[in-house]
Length: 302
Image 1 (cartoon, helix red, strand yellow):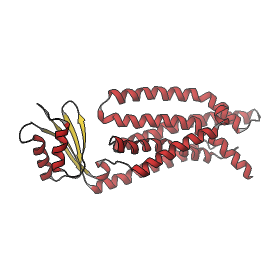
Image 2: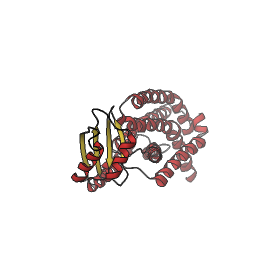
Image 3: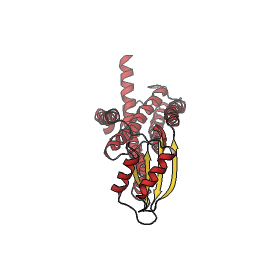
């Protein structure tokens, strides 16, 4: 009953985290990768001796006036993200990275994305997240259609979406902040991680809701009178150990992926890790207590 009794404190914590995330997104903006903005990626390697990073940055700035992002790949390789490069500019860039023949450089890969393709991907990203959210509301409302008292099953779906907004905004706000501090970029892997968070979080929330449904049905069959506050409190007591243990084991796997995995999956693991923690918090401290708050508000209006 502790969580339900002090739900206003947990609501405040969740609201502050969301507000802080929204602030970072609005104030700092999102550092979108070339998949969304359009641009070019050149992957190079130095099979023999390689120049220091500062030399590479200087050589790139001489050819590409705009800001470029450089990321180490393997032991002697680099991935360079720039604005859209023409073929002639790509040749000039490779020549600059050879430093007049002083170093041998191999172009491992070159790819470009036009601005129109990036804009289309942004649109599809919003459509994917929107459709996933609508499908979740419909599924939750359908799965809990047998519950009409004390509140309609549609409220379960609506509260699940509120929890999901919380779970998605927090890692997004973190990446808006990291985009300024360390140059973290929003790419396709980030979107994939957000969609995975949606599925993970709603699964955790549904488990809590399902236990509440079982208790409500049991009380109705046995004609036991209990307030929704009591039902939610006892349901949370029976499920939060499972939620925390699941989150802990998942977080350990993601930490291993972050520290020991490849550099390309580091940010992916970080997004999932933050999303899993936020999802566990929302399923335990927000979803159930929100049901109690909604029920009290609806009862006062009658």
